[in-house]
Amino acid sequence: MSNVIVIGSQWGDEGKGKIVDWLSNKADAVVRFQGGHNAGHTLVVNNKVYKLSLLPSGIVRGKKSYIGNGVVLDLWALANEIKSIEKKGILINSDLLSISETATLILPYHKELDTAREHKLQGVKIGTTGRGIGPAYEDRVGRRAIRLCDIFDKQVLKNKIENALFHHNPIRKGLGIEEINSQTIIKQLNEISSYIKPYVKNIWKDLLNLQESNKNILFEGAQGVLLDIDHGTYPFVTSSNTISSQANIGSGLGKISNHYTLGITKAYLTRVGEGPFPTEQDNEIGEKLGIIGNEFGTVTGRKRRCGWLDLVLLKQSADLSGINGLALTKLDVLDSFEKIYVCIAYKYNGKTYDYLPPTLGINDKIEKEYIEIDGWSQNTRGSKNFNDLPKNAKKYINILRELTGIEISLLSTSPEREDTILFKNPFI
Ligand code: GDP
Ligand code: IMO
Ligand code: MG
Image (cartoon, rainbow, N blue to C red; front, side, top):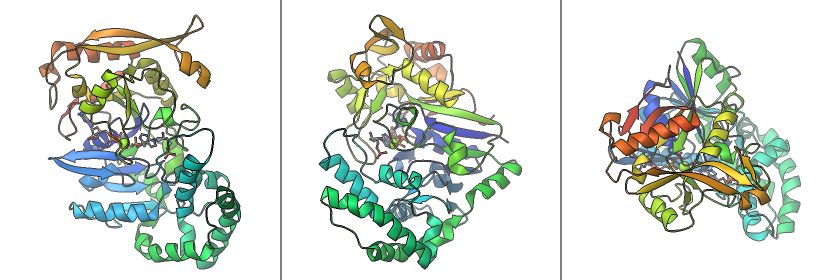
């Protein structure tokens, strides 16, 4: 028995969905433990594309799938996702999918507040996905959230919605948005509650039972370490903890025994939304990476900002998240670059930094130290064997191994499930 925690080591969209799908072959259960439908995880199986935002990626292989308490849940988005995945031939039932009864709900007023703040307020714009993620997490720590278990008791729901609106209506008024009547929300929740009810369970006991029966559990992170609310490039982050220790908190499995933390890492770097990005290439290199890598957001369709791989940030992520090994993705996107650059240190005011200082002013002015690596100018897309890779591609991988001191467990060479090279199985 062993467990694997998959997390993004960068700013999201590293290819977690593809790797989780590949790994889930060996898993008995797959668990989402944070984030919500801001996530967009893409899987390609025999040319068929699956885009998942809330459903764990293991669901495509028919693996037991859990949505943990750490997830913020938009029930209508989930219902639409279930319907769209069912259209692709994956039948979802309550044996397959379980949702934590204590998951926090994203309600329509969260989404409205998210977009209103992004568009109406002066000051810091985050470039959120506009899904209501931040406001829902705010309600959770503010102890006014509606949790999934609350929607099945009419009196409890009424009291809780009124309490939440006592907070939200004055804010809406201030932002010039129409106030909401509690009955409107209650009616919407009543309409969807019977559809959702079969999936709602105690998750932490189930996971504990699975672990005690020696089953392999795969934890599927969303976003990436650099978007972590505590450890990311604050305030340009998401509103949850995205590092691996969140797997315990967001699933309720207090002790994840015998586990391997796998950091999914793009062979270059992207970010969507605002915020610092020291190795960003806001030029023809970035354009080229974006076009070849098809760097457009799965969730919002926004163009992703592109740049060179940043080993300072990668090592920072690995340390913060206890990463045991990397899954390197999208190597093929670099196929036509004659020279490839990798950032190995930062300098500011004559001082060298091996981490990104948290003050934004410094980030903007920081000098980057790069190494130049010869490209391979050959096709690696679809490679399934390390020995078949061009010499310089192997060299690139070995340089990353050496400079980070982290083992590379997997290499992905195309979006397709099987275009994956295994060096070390994370399910030990
Ligand atoms: P996630 O959010 O981390 O699951 O990543 P996304 O699915 O949002 O974005 C990754 C994109 O890259 C998706 O379109 C994947 O199909 C694609 N992808 C994954 N691995 C590879 C790879 O090795 N090569 C190429 N070219 N595309 C990949
Ligand atoms: P996956 O799981 C990339 C970014 C948004 C924005 C910031 C805050 O597909 O890797 P939010 O809506 O969460 O309040 O937005 O976080 N962001 C992501 N970027 N991949 C994601 O998920 C993301 N989820 C959120 O673009 O900058
Ligand atoms: Mg994504």
